[in-house]
Structure formats: C-alpha cells, structure tokens
Length: 194
Image (cartoon, rainbow, N blue to C red):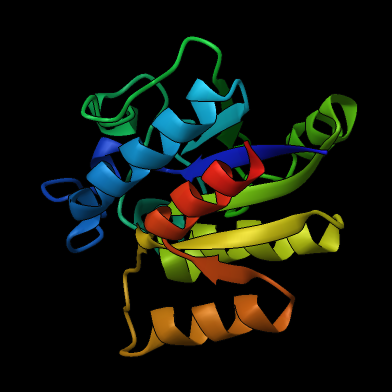
C-alpha cells in the first residue's frame, strides 16, 4: 500500500501577519519541508489543501459567520507560503469553495478519498494548521474513510481560541486511531521500510 502526506492550509492568511493567523504557524515550516522532501524523494503523494473561498463566503463575520475574511480565491492571503517546498507532482485540493458552505476537512466535498483509493493509498500523514480545526477534521475524515492516519506532532499548530482546544483535538484524533509521530520518527520509519 502506498502512503500520502497531507499538508493542511499553510496559506498566508493563516500564518503570522495574516487575517486569521495561527500563532507560531510558520514555525512548523522546517518540519513540514523535511516531510515533503521525504515523500517526494520516494515518489509518494504529497497533497496540499487550501481554503479557497469565494467573495462573501458564509464563514466570514461580514456575512454572518465566525471568522474574519480569509483565503479569498486569487488573493495574496490565499497563497501557500513560498517557503514551503512544492513538488511539481503534488496535488492541490481546494475546499470550502461554495459560498454557502464551510468545509474544514480536505476530504469534504473534494475528490481526495476517491484519489487515494485509485492510487492504492492506505495511509496518510497529516501536518499543517490548525490542529483544532482543519487538521482535526481531516484526520477524523481519514479515519472514517478507513485510511490509517498519522498525526505529525512537530508539524502542526493550533489556534486555541479556548485554552486547551489543540490538546483536546489531539486526544480526539487519538481516540479514532490516529498514531502520533514526529518528523524524526517518520524519517526512521521510512529508513526501516527502504
């Protein structure tokens, strides 16, 4: 069975200086790049997910939602941080593209599950932002779709709007069977399987 790496929402609006910044979100870029390099070097699938909201999205406070305007299609804030490695073979998954629907998971209203099954992918490794929202939703959906799922502990960052949200999210992900490992553990795991 093949494996895949999912890099969640490392977009400018979610990183320091952005309209919906995850505190310290850019600090995980080195760990993510290490993971991307490992997967790309082994010809395994690397997936980048992104929020790709139309103007006036229902999640925006200005339209009755919860969040400030962020990751609007075609804007600088929606761009993936250029410090991340972006292999030519990677797949870009856009989510929350309907004006009236929020989507935190990279699997929600996308073809990601179908793509994984078509490529014979049995396991996915998840990193990115935010631990307590999009990372958690993606991990839970991966488990629901019967993929083995691994959470990259040094390659995630949470918002923690309520103190402890990220820790609770990690507990919830473990409860559905997610295995926690660091990018260093991943390197060792890949070395053993070579």
